[in-house]
Length: 413
Image (cartoon, rainbow, N blue to C red; front, side, top):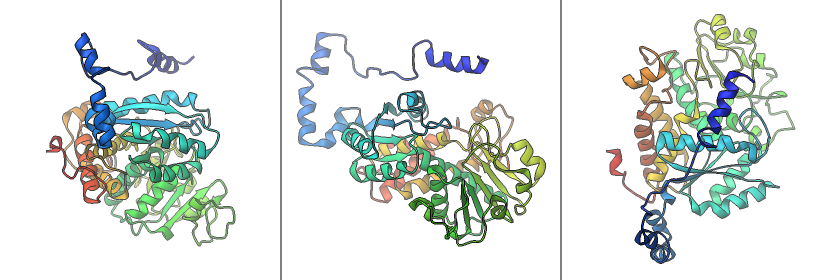
């Protein structure tokens, strides 16, 4: 057993099993305490909530509680291992919610027999929570699941594998294009991968100004083009009217490569085909589509990002999802819409351009960080993310009309 594997297993085992627990927020030491906490005192908030469901936000923890829900059909890079095997990942997500945004989170693993079964299960328990974070659900079912739950639930529903990835990718991409002297509307983009994350990334880039006709998406059969008759509805959105068929065809004079696929799928020779000052996001984890050392040895004019923490420019969802939910919960948003996602993109971008706090430099084990080729996205431990991203998201929710609370909380001032 490798040393790291044993450390990981020990981390999850000691001093108690798992990564999350429940703590009390009220005293429960005396008979009087228990009379208030349970019978007969608990009857009073029950009556208030029965008369006004919104009172649940005042008398219970609903307003700061997010459910992390999976069926285990797409666990990290491990595949369909079932709901119970996904529990360590869902507990990890709950840990990140608490650590970075102070949000209480409960993991729920659903053993469903059908997509409809999963949707019904989540919809039937949704009112318990202030928000629903869907996780590790395979495509194409994840698209239907999220859209149907958004329709049926009164609280925000967010599939982080899609939209969290897209938000962080878009923020890093727009900064990289700026540094390279390029614009999103003129960039030719090649996306290797056509699953949930890839589709969401490209859709958000389109909302940020990318031209659909300048995007070449590839699946296992090659370029997705209009003459193919085997495309799902989500792939059809990116069917390009082109004669390009292979990755090499698509990369010829391309400005951007986004990999959401698998390890070592971008050949060095193909990288040579890209336009001057290329941008490569090789986000397969733990092994990227091309190793940064190899990519930089081929192209000195490159900006490179991966999903790994041991290289510069880590594209990591933790830069986004805790703060998206923090902002949504704080103004009691009914959904997480495009305006809120783009507000998060802009806020993340701006943080990168500001002076980096000393504590972030120390946590990153570097002497300095300046906006440029090796720093296009904030570090995950940056404390400014909570205040600035959550505030931008909350304000966007108010401005777009999906917030029940019409003013920012005083904590944002």
